[in-house]
Length: 281
Image (cartoon, rainbow, N blue to C red; front, side, top):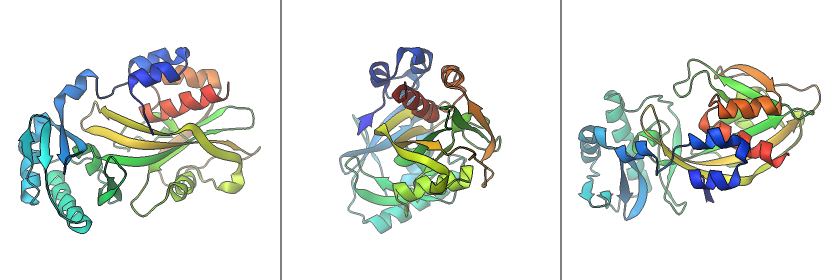
C-alpha cells in the first residue's frame, strides 16, 4: 500500500501536473502542525485538532476511554472488545455532534481499522475526519470510447467540496460492504450505471493509495482510496439517481489536466484523474 505524500506525487505524477502537486497537503504541510497524533494500545489511530482538545478529551472521558497525554501525543490503553468500542465511538460521536464538531452526519457506519488492517470497531462515517481515523473509499475514473473523461459536478448541498468536479463515481465503503459491492453501488447511485454499460473496468495502478492530510475546513482526512478505471460502451452515458451529483461533464484530456491544475476537482478525484491520464498516454 502506497502513501500518497507530496514527495511520492513528485516522483510518480507527470510534470505537467506540477501546479496540482504543489498544492497537495500531507502530514508535513504547515496546517498539519495544528494536529496531534493519538494512539490506541500503542498503534497510531488518528489525529486530533489541538484547538478542539478542550471538547474532544471530555468526550473520550465520558465514553470511559480516557486519553493520556504523552510526548508523542495522546494514548489510550484499553482491553475493550469491538462491540463495546463501537458503542463508545457512538457516544463520542453523539456528544461531539451536539457541539458542532461532526459536520456532514450520514447515519452510515464504517470500519475502524488498525494500521495493520485489523477491524477494531465501527463508527459513524462523519466522525472519521473529526478524530482522523482511517476510512476506505472507492474512486472510479470513467471515459467514453474516444478517451474523453466523464466527470461529475458535486451538488451544492454537499457538505464537502460542494460544486467541485469529481470522479464519475466515488464513495466510502460502509462497514458491511466489500470493495466490489461499493464500486457497483456508487456507479448505480451516482451515475445510473451497471456492468452492462462498460466495455471494460479494471483496477487503476497503483490500486490502493493512503491519503493522510489536514483539511482546510477542519478535521483530518485519512483514507485508503481504491482506484478503478473504466470505459463506457458507445451510446451509454451517466444519469444521477441519488441527488448527490448536480450535473455531468464530458471533458477532453487536455481540459481535464487544466481543471486538475486549477484545483477545480476535489483532491482525491484530481489524483485519480492524474494517474489515469498518465496511464493512458
